[in-house]
Length: 416
Image 1 (cartoon, rainbow, N blue to C red):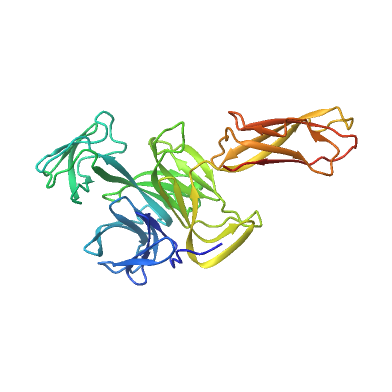
Image 2: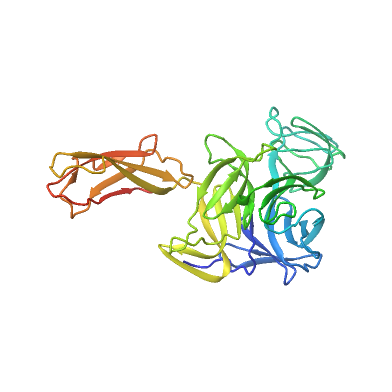
């Protein structure tokens, strides 16, 4: 177990391979490589007078959430790096009128699309995506979109005038020229995991906020949204049955939960991912203070971690790596019947069920069966090595020995 980032604050975001932290003590946006080497520091153009709780990045902007100066308020700011300075562009103050705002994490719903076709300086109408399907997220008049970079590295942020399907009309003509496939990015909503529903702090709530005004659009009450420390938003491809989705994710206990935000009245889940955030005592949960997803890589910010059965800490915050690639997470066995006669004839069917970190079956993986050496029984000849089927199950048979005994069967599965 080794440290890497040595961050002093419990928040993190990963952008283009660099790890960022808001240091509200020195008023700097700190940039580090994955081995903890400081690559650069960007001064804030405004002083950070209150405790920073969480940060996010939408592909263009850095977002931060801090405690407000008044009780039960929060401040969310949007900033961009310009000329080596981290400049605040918008400040949203979440009022305590009718609400008790107390949160450790938020995220910004944002989308990375591409333009269809080429556009020259002066164009005001842009087709996004494949030219047929609608935009993946809500985009309305008055919102901002960023297009670029083009082949010359130029980008521009422009205001939306009208949207019809996947055709976007902008308020002012383009200044630069952009080719087919140029990135088209926008943000629309803020998702806040609050430790109160309205003023009721006996239950938590997930708040959906307008990212431009900070106004509360919806509240989804539930204990599952209380005391959440880490969340993020990203495009996910590992749920085969859903295809490519844009998912809100948050950490609860030792699971990463994926929320379907396409529904307004309710928020069903796509699935859950088991994480190795359990203390060596197999009872206590290791806190995850922030989480970032980059492609199929997951980075968790923690003060301690468990390696090979031993839990240890650092005194600073460091990232722990995980992956969305399918890995063996559990193997469970059942015997039917589980009691047989000790007559060297009776058999029991043994089923080993192999699951990944999403509790999905792992297909086509070899399982090796054996009997503990102290037993007089045996695995039926030729059934010692079995491949998992479409249900992630490998089936073998155990034949009893001549002694009445408690039998220990062992199953091992290859990880890759």
